[in-house]
Length: 105
Image 1 (spheres, one colour):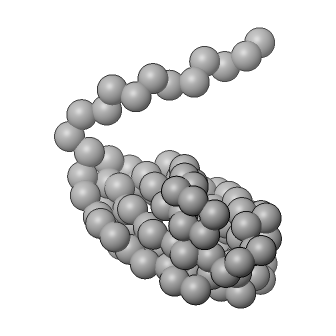
Image 2 (image 1 turned 180 degrees about the vertical axis):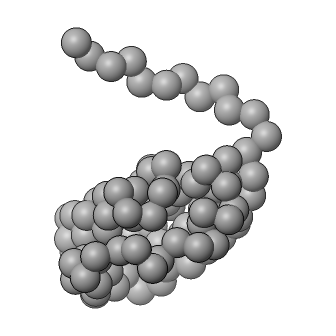
C-alpha cells in the first residue's frame, strides 16, 4: 500500500464546510480513482491532517483523470475553506496492524 499524508490549515469558522467538501471529494476519489479511502484527523480548531491510502504508488500517480465534473465543485468548495493544503509525506506501508472495523449485521 501507498500512503499520502496531508496537512491542512483551515480558515476560522470553516470547519463544517471543509469537512463536508472533503468527504464529498474523497468519496469521488475512492469511487473513480481506485483510492482505498482516507481518514481526516483534527489537531486543533484550525489544523487538520488527512491520511489517504492507495493500493500502490502507480495508482496514486495515475489518479485524477477519471473524476466526474462534480469533483471540481467539491474541490473548489474545499479550496474556499482553507489557507494551506500541503503534502507532508508519501510512503509505503510495510506492516499493517490496525484493527479492521467489524461489520454490523
